[in-house]
Image (cartoon, rainbow, N blue to C red; front, side, top):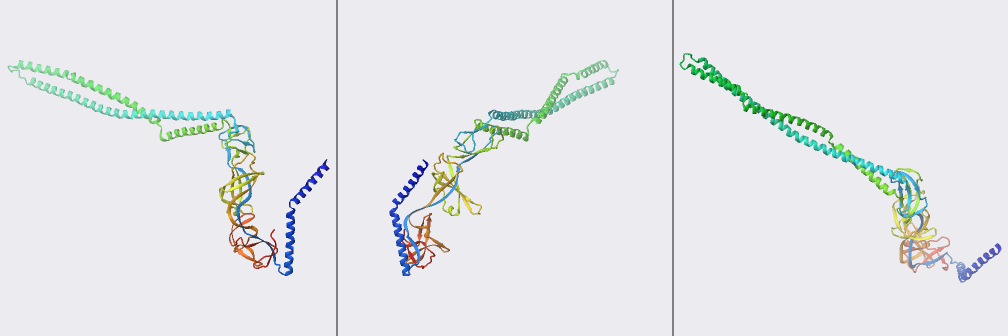
Length: 491
């Protein structure tokens, strides 16, 4: 069976060969004829002594030229997301591994729910505690300020009342003393006059008895007045008023002592600016901590989820690990938005522009895209050659794309229509610029040209030659201005 298979394969190969020669028999005959004619021309020129540099020629022609850059790069996700632990906790489950494809919303990592709930509850209690402490301090401070304000207000009134009543008491005492003194002085003076009259009374006076009785009566009246002077209604009223004023002063002074004590205690409990700032800061910090804990809890209570379709390119933790906030967990690169990153040479950068179309081949599959980024800074490679980073964004990436693979692409840069074209190999260069050789009267003539865009096959000629010029394309040996040439037929 193997022998029959081998014979069949050889037969098929021979058939293919016969078929190719059959299809290209006419072309083969033409090539042989051309070669024979070329040999005849060369031999004839040699016999006549006219043979020079053997050349082939071509003519410039009008056509369309698309300039392009062909090179390679690396397939990457357009967006890269590095996930960090938003909250401390234990990782209960890791659902992905490097290389896994995920959809937006898929769970990547799940926390231990009980431990997460406990941490969140603790932050909530700390906020309640700080809030209660702040509000209690503010309420107490308000009461203390109210009491301090009351004490200051009352003390000012009490001081004035005490001062006024002390002055009033002094006046009362002065009036009472003066009244008693005036009454006593008047009675004493009258008593002195009566006693003097009594001593001066003449017993031999005919009216002695009547005068004696009158004096004795006046003395008795004076003694009576002196006896009741200190017990008159006026004195009693004055003494009663003095007592009332003294009691009022004592009461006000007692109340003043209470207000002074209230003022002292209130001043001690009133918050100063530093205490108030501290309570406010504690409350604000606890509020921020709670909000962060709440946000983190809400973010991870249902698991850390993919934000976009992508490929997991790195996982930095393991299941059961206790992580702190900020711990790097994993890296996700987008798969629905894909780019190809590459390094462009100095010559290629001159042709690159944002928005240029590109054809990209990845793992045998062809995609279209556009140049999306050209770095503004070059980096030197190991050979110290400056290279500029650039990117191509794919128009419609699919599930066949594998991140990290090599990509080959062609970027279509400038395009010329109805341009004068020549093969790139006819163009020469020296220190003065570009030039071509044309055939005139059997000799090579140098013509300076101005070149436009080019690709691997053709170049645009802006100035220097026309379609009528016979341009030397290849030659055998060396060629210089004025050299005799022998043109072989074009194939």
